[in-house]
Length: 434
Ligand code: AMX
Image (tube, rainbow, N blue to C red; front, top):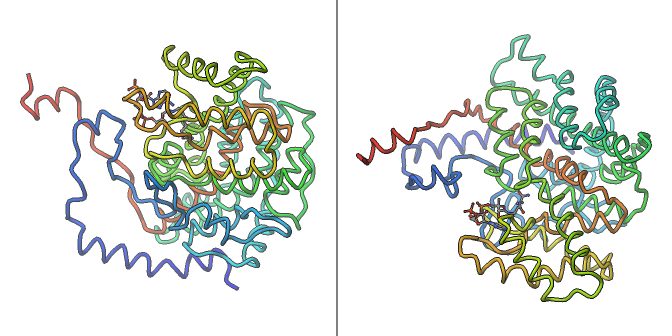
């Protein structure tokens, strides 16, 4: 059976032709009207990126190459005795648009395992990093330091034809995904435990090995990781981590530097760090309402968050207008594996109350929960209680979504990204506004 690289290479000529034909037919047609509010308003709703892996429908949520999360769960290959899809298969799907066979995914798992060794200087840097430096800052340091491994940067320095860029970006992307769990596990074990990372096993899948490296050996935790790493991969192109990786990559910075840039964006509280924020917010809620807290207490806590000018973390979205299907997938997992866990019950209680309270504020466009409202509670149940680490897990998964597009960007020969900006003065002048 063809490998991932062969499958992608085989699909490429047709894809490039399709883009060429589409542009020849409609390249100068108007796509939409843009308004000044879009420019001042964080470009909401402005179509200005190509992203092949996924498209987000405001009502239905994410579709990965056309497949919903339940469809992904059903169709992607699974580990033996597992009911969760393997994120390795998700990477395959996002890059090629095709559902891989079980054998193809097994071969990819083995290939990632074979590429997972870290250069010594990266472990050295992490060993000398202060423990109180945020785990996401440590991750960004380490991924930047992995630049030494970039075959793209080396080949470019030697002199590389544009048509060959993608091959090296592909190699770097696989190496990066392969090395990320070890980097992430070193950070976790250094900051919160004894600094020792368990050995991996070439016969296990990526998530089972990563679980072992973190120090969690139960099959159920590996199941959680398989789901977690699959659903956090990709959320179309405009979110900050995806957009940033793509933007920096357009300068022909290596995949390492591009992904590190994306991770810096993921580290913000309005984006990936929301999963850490949610946990802090929930634990505080638990403390405030005590053992006998009811609906009225949760409502009061929500109102207090809002009236103090803060956001309710884990709720709202720039594109979604319904409950995030990634939230629903995690809820199903909790209902199956931890139905009586008190913190899960609290999350469910908030889900019953928060949308109504948030909807009272007319400015909030989406009162429903997003992916981050649920993920921390699952980790808490299995003992991974260190909240400041949560965004690192999100980051490991996000690499599976943004790197396929980086490969595609170079395969399509997309140019340096360079939109036009205006000053307020210039806008006022345009509208003859005084
Ligand atoms: N709590 C309180 N206020 C909220 C809110 C929430 N959960 N969601 C939106 N609002 C506010 C905004 O802060 C904004 O207020 P302002 O005009 O005074 O600045 C107003 O409602 C309009 O915002 P919006 O158009 O509904 O959302 P947006 O596209 O500007 O922002 C998001 C989207 C996610 C940043 C926002 O909903 C938010 O801050 N949510 C909480 C943080 C969070 O969960 N982030 C994770 C998102 C998923 C992810 O990237 N991992």
